Picture (tube, rainbow, N blue to C red):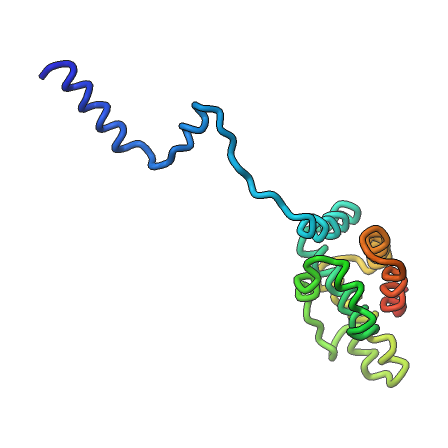
Amino acid sequence: MKLSTLLGLLMSCTLITAPATAGWFDDLFGKEEVKPVATETQTQGTDLVSNVMSQLGLNKSQAEGGLGSLLTLAKSTLGGEDFGPIAKAIPGINELLSAAPAIDNESGMSGLLSKAGDLGASLQGGAQVYDAFEKLGISKELAAPMVNIVKGYLDSHAGDGTSDMLMKGLSTIL
């Protein structure tokens, strides 16, 4: 066999068995990989969770669940109309609300308060937040700092009075 035939056969085999990607062409010609760019709304929503994670030393599921628990309390205390500005200011709020763990109203601190009549019912929302924090492995002492992070976020990303409305909705734990 001639050397040129052998070389041609070897090149053909190499090209056929090479991976079917052309990424190495990009490296040869200096083309950069195009990465998706996060929108401002996505970045803002993750900023709140990231701030809670970094400032309080929590993992992502704890931060999302803790925020969800606080926001669930504010929503139930304020009602839909007053909670609206808060919901508009926090991107991905539905995901945060759904990240809050389900609480059994028959056990824990909230269970005891549910049996205590009207006074217990008024305090039960705060107890549910503490029970949710316990389920998530978060110290209840981190509730106030987490509220302050959300308040600061709303002060810089929402209209006037929005953070005051949040504080009103969370008055049972403050």
